Structures are given as structure tokens and as C-alpha cells.
Image 1 (cartoon, helix red, strand yellow):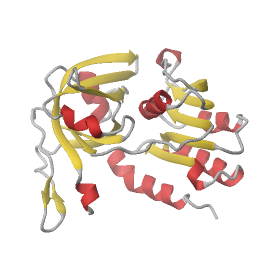
Image 2 (tube, helix red, strand yellow; image 1 turned 90 degrees about the horizontal axis):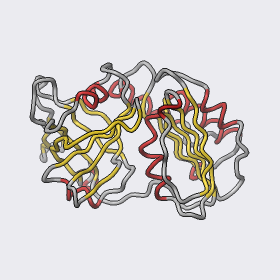
Image 3 (cartoon, helix red, strand yellow; image 1 turned 90 degrees about the vertical axis):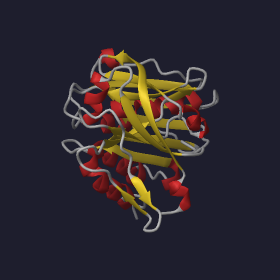
Image 4 (cartoon, one colour; image 1 turned 120 degrees about the horizontal axis):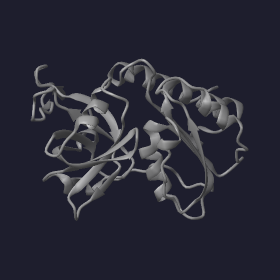
Length: 276
């Protein structure tokens, strides 16, 4: 574990308010004394949220054993569920950051927490300190994702220069879940609908229908494991996109909890990095 990896923000925050951006999309605003520490981070990058067990109103963070350079986890009875989400925004004047959640019932701890969250409820947030780059400069962008990717794609769209062009393909539950995403760039939006948060060929089939640029291009793909794997293979192996022209990562795997699929998703990402 390097010193860079240890430069993290660790904060116990509380819910200040929440709003439904669409029937299946919840924005939760968080406040607390640690908010100002997030001002040196990049909107759109990943964070870890820590959801306390039912009946526990305090976040028990893991503690670092500096001598062994190992993290010591709290007792199971108070140990929070840890999930990966996106740092969606910050307002220092209002002392808030916010995180967007896909609401798909109580089957997952994060969705259930967001649905039932009320002002004052605690949430732990862990995030690497410092600025980072979400995307490189290019003339043309291909942005592809399902509902779980809207936060990062929304952050990219807001940051793109007016000179950029491209297409943004997003799959959501139905038309009522389509959002107005702000951008200065010349972006053509394609919204796809799939009623279940599960496997679908909509994304890869739609990508194959696009006339893709041949140079000064970059693709950001974030969705379910199988969709990301298919899109990455298509761009790299069939369309000969270079490794530095593409970032593709699966946020989840159908039928498997995030903490159970993390290793496989990372291994698949590494295995396709160089298709030769």
C-alpha cells in the first residue's frame, strides 16, 4: 500500500435532504463538518459509501494498522456495507455534497438505504484526495452507459468544451427516467429503455449502429459487466481503437452483488487491456 493510496478523505456525513430526479433515480444530499475536505476532489470520480447496519446510527470505519500496513475491519455487528458510487457534486456555501442512486427496491443495501434515507441519517464516505482526470482531450466522444453510469457521464458532459462533438447512449428503465443532462458540447443523445436492471443487448447493438470517428476520439463506457465486455471487445478488436482511446469499466454484474463480483470485474478489465 503506497502513501498515495493512504491519502483519503474519511467522513461521517448525514442526510440533509433528498429528491427524486426521476421515478427510479434519487439524489441524496449530505452535510457535515468534513464537507470542505471534498473541495480538492473531482466531480465524477468514484467514492466508497459506508452504509451502517439497521439500528446502528454511527459509522464504524476500518482502522489502519500502520505497522502491518493493513486495514482492521470493525466487528461484524457494526460493520457497514461498502459500495462504490460517484461523487456527483459539491456546494461549499450550502455545506453539501451529493450522490445519485438508482432506486431498484430493497434488494441491495445502497438502493434500500437511499429509498428510506431521511434527514439526519448517517453515511460514511471514503474518497481519494486530490484532483484527477476523467477523460483526455479529443474532438469526438462516445459516451455509453446504463442508469448506474448517469452520474459519471453527467459530470463528463458538464465539463466538455463547446468544441467537442459526440454521441451519448444511455439505457434507463423507461421514458420517465430520461434526464436532461447539461452540456456545452455538440452531443447527440440516444435514450434506450429496458424495464429490468439486468442483461440487455441494447447498448452494444446501438453502438454498432453508430458511424464512429477514426481519429481524435475517446470513449467512456460504464455499465453492466457483459455489456461493457462486449462494447470494449467491439471497439478494440473490430474497430481497432487504441487502448488510450477508451475507458470501459463495469460497475456491476447481473445477479451478483458488487462485493462478490469486484475481483472478476477487475480481472476482465485487465485481460482485455491489450487484445493482441
